[in-house]
Figure 1: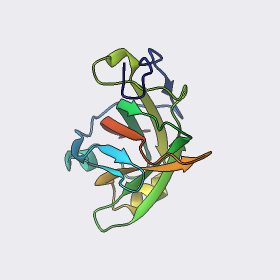
Figure 2 (figure 1 turned 45 degrees about the vertical axis):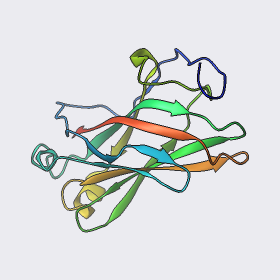
Figure 3 (figure 1 turned 60 degrees about the vertical axis):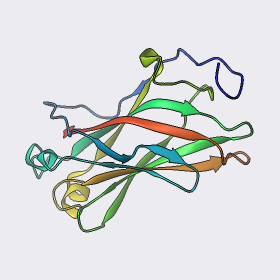
Figure 4 (figure 1 turned 135 degrees about the vertical axis):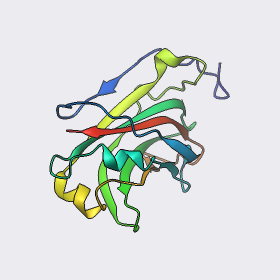
Length: 159
């Protein structure tokens, strides 16, 4: 049971956009891996990620969730962006957890992953590879300030 009195969901979902070629993990290191409304999660990517990305192919960025605690009222959308070493930002997309039910790291099967394409020209704008992935929670359909989402990892690989 969670603080909201609901049982954790056992649903595992994977949203995959585009096809991936060879995979090269980006070794996510979390400065602050928990997103809250008004306080985004910021996941620093290892510099080795840039070496693994061909400059003209684009990339696939996969964000994995380790835990989610919904608000008591309303729900949130997670907006994902890539930030380059010079501060340039490229919006990658957004997702919401469905069903809007809590899950935690104690149940790895309930984790979720969401994949986003990063076009070659956007990759170039970021200096060849993002240095950070930012996940920002935005309330949707009512107040949801107490919702939290913990990022379990980020992977970036060539398209």
